[in-house]
Length: 154
Image (cartoon, rainbow, N blue to C red):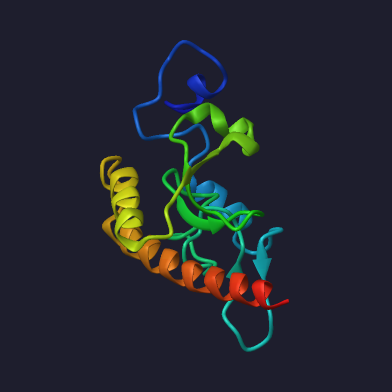
């Protein structure tokens, strides 16, 4: 019986902060070869479209499903930009639909940078995640403006 096993089963023992019932390495080992988010093709790197993955590269470091702290920038159905942050609570693993929180982001670069820094730096995400989120925001803003211009021409 492991040291952490009792709290996962519902005992009164508590996990240390920052750990979850299912360790990230175990989740990655189960999903690294095949999962519903993988996009594989010949002579190309394996990509992924999982939520919480900023780079869309199928890698443990950027995996939104395996990591406890994951972040993504997305565009919703109404063409609004959202910062998607994974909730740190352990009990959300049982409810995948509630694992992520969506925060609205402005399309203005300065306001978006403030929102991203406030959400990620204060909660001690990796510094590389902040840079990647800003780059992703810039690319999505450009794609969004092209889409809206093409829609206006029709």
